[in-house]
Length: 463
Ligand code: GUN
Ligand code: ZN
Image 1 (cartoon, rainbow, N blue to C red):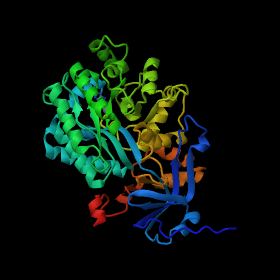
Image 2 (cartoon, protein in one colour):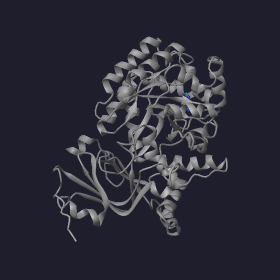
Image 3 (cartoon, protein in one colour):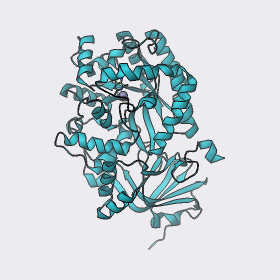
Image 4 (cartoon, rainbow, N blue to C red):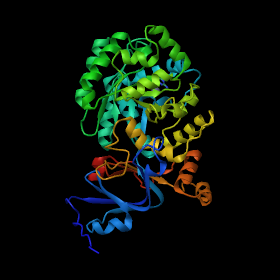
């Protein structure tokens, strides 16, 4: 038998290793044979260099290839996964999580708009961005598709904090020039879109940051603003710029859209009419989507963010994943917390709620599909599936380390489980806080539950 000899540390540079159980996805289990969609390694090793994954395999098969690898973090009773991806969240609503809700539109007027009006103040925006990132990283979320608000200060504060951790994040200025308080309203459609483009030029592709054109939702933009937003998106879509908005969340919202845009046959057509529907469009909620709209979302390659805890909290509607994943016209979707409509920052906890939302319609949602949605499914929704969301050579090294025994009860309960997906289903159902041991961003351990200083910026780690 010929013995293969590997070069010692091929390519040079500092190597870092992470050893533990490993789970990663390579295809969509809603559309493919389940067993071909993931790899599970009971004792694996991830080799990282310069923020990227260089190699991954069974520990015993790979360790001999890297004799220069001495810096290895080893996790027992833990599962290393790609960092979670939150496809829809409002960082600016972090100060109002758990505000009493009745209907979506009342909740927006009573709590959301007054809270967001405060983000004209950069110091306040800085404080909220800091808390928001700490929460996300604590929960193992490494990428999010985020709403800021009207003010440039809210966008700058967010991206500045993201740069400190070197996270891959998406946000942009929110465009909103009617049907909301003057304190939050854009001064004019033209000025708002110029401001958005200036922020785009400042932040898009700066380090790992990505920009989105964000009309809040059709009712809070004039047709003129939607049209200018569509022009801006179309000019930059091939450079990786996103369009992010809300769609078909609640009955009252859809009725309002019908009154405001009577010429269009449905809500999705409104966005399409203004050039806002495309391959980097991400639509939050989509609870009450008509068949004609699913077809447009499929044809145009849009992504959808399913936000179950928010939909339950605001009593909106029930997302129907089996319609989204209809084999003849599948639509990409991932998971969003939608904080502050959502009631916590944890993606695994959203999975527990997504299961219940599906069960209300007698459809279950298992752990294989759920954790796909939390990782690679989110990356596909954001069209970043070649960059993040999987553990494979060339991918950015963003990882979550899930504690498989985070509490006394969970540890005991796990004795009565079988394979890794049974364990994950228990965890997403229990929805425990503190189930994430550590979070790596671009190969650096920016969060460690057991460290005195739990969160660390990239520069602090690099020394
Ligand atoms: N629709 C328009 N704005 C919002 C918002 O801030 N939250 C939710 N859940 N829906 C919206
Ligand atoms: Zn939202």
